Image (cartoon, rainbow, N blue to C red; front, side, top):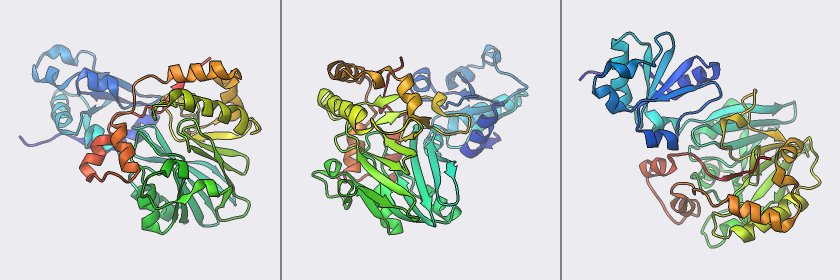
Length: 379
């Protein structure tokens, strides 16, 4: 059958999501939809499985508006083409998302967090995964923090903002996505840094972060302090820039703390996290902007499109950040962490350790789904 469905790219969908005048119709089965779907602050989303349209029951169209554009979404773009075509034949204005959730999982959206004549910080949001990476730029030189798999995104960004990538760092060994760090560094001739605690027993080519108190990016005024902040993993490292911006990796999030159970040592790592929160980060000012490596709720994206919050606000909103009793803090964090683990995380860690090589198709498949690296503590 010839395909006459209108299609929409992920970039176009995201632009329309920003204005809020689009309805997402997800035609995957109910479980897939509840596990992982396209979300946005102004997005209305409904789930009507594909097979319901095959049964040609007119009731299936009852709740669908004719005056709003509809983006039809499936796993890879095939079923959504069929449904979009059916809808358009009945007078609806619909388009099929090209490549489906697979394409959405590969979409990266850069937003400028801060810029003056000496320093520019860009947050690159991989919306489908809630993964955040950063470009720190000064005087035509740059550092990329926590790059994801699609390294062309960062190479393109460097061209666009006219800087040379000199440093590439991973704040820790990631469990929910494949790092682009070593490949990016190799391709652009940059230095790749990782904590030696994280790289223990691997053959990774890296500079140990623990040997550097600071890394200079361009202008001397841009000071990147590497602060060991164990807890989520033993070698987790945060980066403090000019005492104003804390790239916190998976140590502190806008809505919680990093989960310490992925290494199977929840209690021990929760104690490390306690030490990090109440000793290592204690003297950081309240007006320091925390920029994490992940978020797990679209409500954490602020009105400027940035995931970030002042440290003072995070301390205020997170009861656990004020719980200075070590035993009860440790207990609280360790017990809150025993939830669903990131899908395929053992395999992803093995890839990030350099122990496993997979082809592009398998890599994309492994990353499908949301990230689950946070522990939420509201109070």
